[in-house]
Length: 267
Image 1: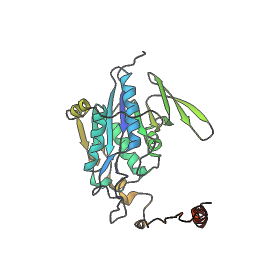
Image 2: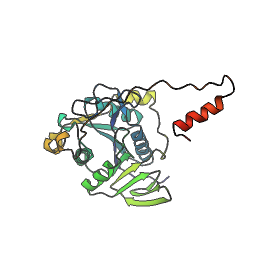
Image 3: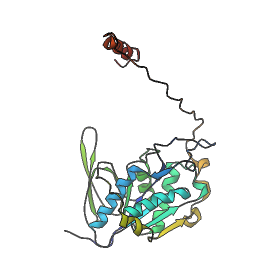
Image 4: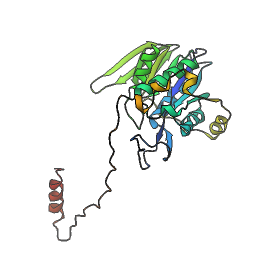
């Protein structure tokens, strides 16, 4: 197998509210990320997996998990470490709360600069809570790096990368030379589960916590007040009503079902 040496990989991970839990909003109409269970975004697990696969075939490579978020967001870094990442960085600052994609990309880019000499930045295709898919491209612009995004297949020889991007009508093959920003889809490969050995080893891996001041980012550049969009109002979803039961006591069930479907405009 061809082997390279000394590749520094940063994988961006996000802590998101559990999709199965009741979603709530704060008084400022931002998502409640404190009073709800959270976890590593499922789509970012694929990014961690591809980072680890790249590390495993590259001699001397190391993977750092990078997360921006409140105190509980450290759980996302911890999960990445349990899966096999070597170190973690958690950027946490109260001023970040309410930041949009533009501000988030700013914080991530400055953290990557502080980590230094990064060869590959790996991201998921989107976050499961926001779903915007634009942060990798924004980071690439801020870092002045090429971007190869929405990769379903990733190949590399040293610092030469080639990906396949599946579209609606065609599959594109895109190449770039590291340093670069890469985002991967959920078709890139099944993410591994943390082993017991990995869970125990993660407890001894280094994790640094940085503030905006550590990154040289002014608080006025991030947060809700600097966001380009705002949620004006939120309305709770109405409770689900009881379903209608169609019976077939006298052989009329089929006709009743058709009538029901037609009334609901399903047919």
